[in-house]
Image (cartoon, rainbow, N blue to C red; front, side, top):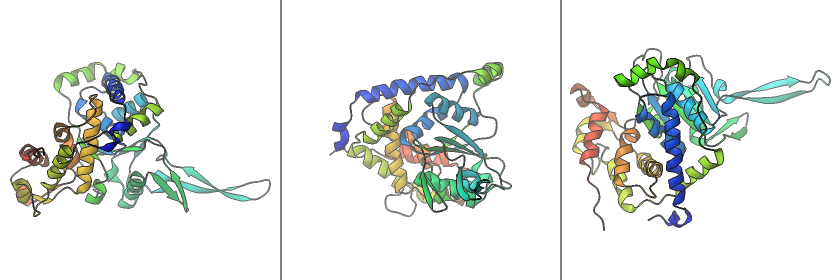
Length: 337
């Protein structure tokens, strides 16, 4: 077990579970029928990771992220990405100001929308790679450098980016190396029929509903630190590593599925995220340590944007989700020593 276990009071995980349940309840009063997306987003916040949501327009992605920010009392900014956007539109720019009394000129930095805590990067694939890279650098380093000056971003700095899976004309798909910076990739689907009836019937209420803040900033920071310190058994770590390795074709230990249908598999960062996200899932359930079931539960979201299908998969009409489900199901748990 992790030696840091002695430094964590198990009661904090019970508190975290209570706060998670309360926050989930607040969000579901406004965002109806998207429970499968809410919990992974909470995982990202607890891990200070970033999420990519893929879904058609009109599924309440903006409403979901804004409501999450309100429930946690976090600063929120939405950035609508467009083909003509420049890095300075995200990071900020330096302005020359002149004192009319003295004629002296000074340089002042005007902060961009990235200087917030929860960022919604709407349709990130609509902006050129140079602008995408500016945001992704801030995601990786959690700081911005302009004019030789480096400025840190306020924690917890979390980016939720969205992509429209239908319209591809005039877009700039994120390269695999940049996709790897996102902890989770989430598919946002249409709501079930009864949920959609509620959405349509309660449109006015949803638009005016007030969300209660359920967590203070210092509490959230304490929760994220507790998640980092959560002990993980070697048994679970080995399972996560094995799961990631089995997605890599043409390497020792690759699954038959990956060998036949994948061009590329997940790297070591995937196993790191599998473990950290499983910690958050366990904490949200009030448990002091994760198990292999937690790794299985979060694995599709961690792995789906880290594997590349080959022509055999597309020719047979197989999807990433289908193939990952097979690998996850067929990966055995390591034997206990």
